[in-house]
View 1 (cartoon, rainbow, N blue to C red):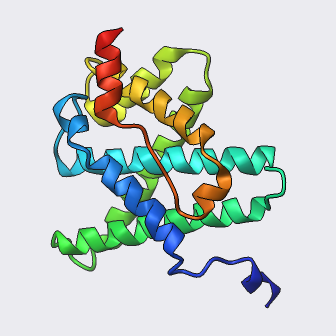
View 2 (tube, helix red, strand yellow; view 1 turned 180 degrees about the vertical axis):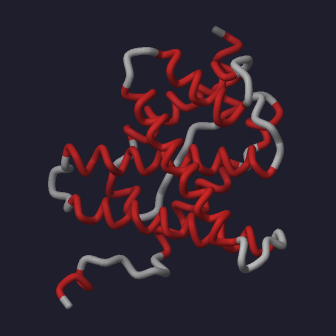
View 3 (cartoon, helix red, strand yellow; view 1 turned 60 degrees about the vertical axis):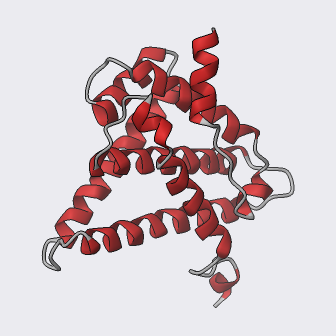
Length: 191
C-alpha cells in the first residue's frame, strides 16, 4: 500500500514525453546521412538503445550522487518506467512488423540482451580514460566498422555533457533535450 505513493502511474505524461524525445532524436536524418549509422531497422533500434542508455546513465548518476532536495527513489522509478515503455514499444513494433506471437518473446529476449550489453559497453567506455574505447563500442554495435565511429563518439560525448547540464527536476517533468547532431557535425568540421 505505501509503495503506491512512490510509484509513477504507468501513463505518466513525463515518461511518454521523455521516451518520445528519445525516439525523435534517434530518427534525426543527420545520423543516417552524416554519421554513418545504417538507415535500417537495426540501425534505428541501435540509435534508440543508445539514447535510452544515455538517459538512464544520467538518471543513475543522480541516484548515486543524490540531488539536493530530490528523492533518488524518483529517478530510479523514472528510469525503470522509461525502460518499461521501451520494452512495450519494441514488443508493439515487433508485432506490427509481423513477428508471430510465438516468436515475440524470443525477439524481446534478444533485444533485452542487446540493451544490457550496450549499456555495459557504453557506460564502461564513457567512464574509461581511454577515448578509443567509446569509438570501438560504437563501431562494433552501431556502425559496423571503425570508419566514422569517431564522429558518433563526439556526438555521444556532447550528449552526455548536455544531459549532465540538465536539471534533474526538468527531466522528471519530461523535459529532455539532446544536442543537434547536425550542429555538432558542423562544429567538428570548423575545428
